[in-house]
Image (cartoon, rainbow, N blue to C red):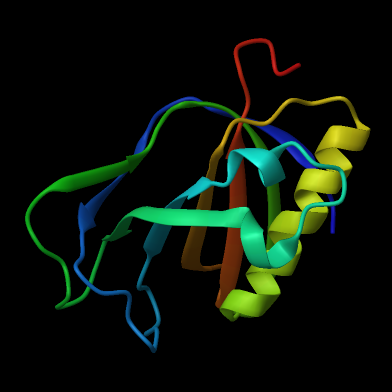
Length: 139
């Protein structure tokens, strides 16, 4: 897993969905946004089971499950990691988020208390991406 600092110049907009789908189709794109438990979100050894707080929203760009209302991955600076070749299950992307946090803190970043998980189809294969917002300046 490679940790990157990503400067997202424009927001990624999604339609809110009531329920996250259990299956993905080619060209579907979904975004989950979670609040993180404050005590865990800055720990170099977070308790994986306690890291995620409430789901703030789920969003989609395609499919029948889309509803009215807009959700967004805002423009800004992020810690960013991705896994190409698979839509990861919750246990797998949560492990990825924990490793991203550990690596980010080791590099002296101070990520904010939100976690965005994006699922998309890119270059012929599924991709899972993890975003953690960084304050202005990144450190």
